[in-house]
Length: 358
Length: 106
Image (cartoon, rainbow over all chains, first blue to last red):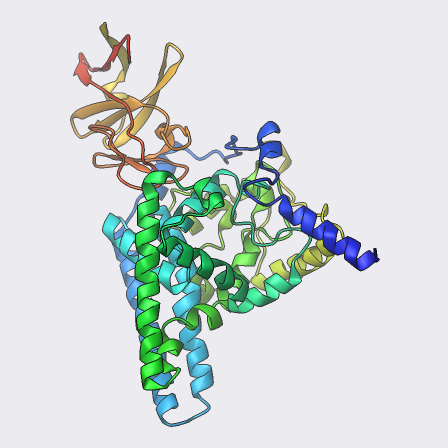
């Protein structure tokens, strides 16, 4: 066996540990890492209560601005397309990016139920955003609950974006969500036929399965209509507006999302060591709905996106220093992922304040 | 057999807030909503997280870990990720103290 073949087998075997069935979940359970107690920075109850307060105004305003931006870029793209102008390419690129990438953070915040005070608004935007980012709404709601219970616990967390050793091809394909959609689409089709995957059954309760099946049928129905319209019109245009943006517009949420945990240690019980808080500019923070305050979010998921900056100011003395930009975060992430390609045991170690080490 | 148990002072809990009360090896959540008081098991039915760190909004308690919601009046779950009802207990104010009724078979 050549060295390359041996390395590939080793990588495959290690990636098997991430499986929720037959992976390293039992080992994690035996080591007390499952549904465990995580470190929390001390915050007085009155302060936390004020941080947790919900309001509709901010999320309504942001949602109007977001969809207005999608609409405006869509109109510009259409005008450029009609004029046979090459400007249609950047215009659709902007449209697709606005359509898909901020949908990731809206999906996330609404899944937690913290974006709006009014429940139905959270649920409505959750469904829309799930569609735009090509996620099965109910499955991902539950997978994300597991992600919060067992963050980066191998064999338990279904949302580990950068398993070790680094899967560069997978990451590259996900610049345009190709790996994601190629895994998600067959599962959606299977759900539409009434089947629920074995791994999904480990974190979604049976009472939710009918919802998964219904959502898969509706989602595929919408795509069937768009596809049929494209075929009938003999034009890719309808698909450029609905469907394909979930692929060609995904790059920005990958760019944001990898800063959350990539290169950081697995199987620890302190979010300060396995999450990153990154200072971002106001445009990024709007698009990402403040998920750059990721340690704070994981430690206190009840705090809405608009209060995370305030929370950051309160707890920052008990946190590792934040990264000053996404570039600063990637200056650490890329070398870490490169090293993890050949040494999966490697991880970045964050400087946690000594007085409060968990 | 039912028994009224003294928990905390009414004034110790702010309006629309929750307090933890431990008794006989069990943990309870005591709620105050305006002049009404309610009581439930203290741990979320989803993943056994203490509800006393959660947020009370009207008659709804939201779990601090996964944001599952219950109606504190009857314990019914109000959406994912909670599916299982929360056990609730009769509660009343007597002499400025909040009492909850626990049955021996609860």
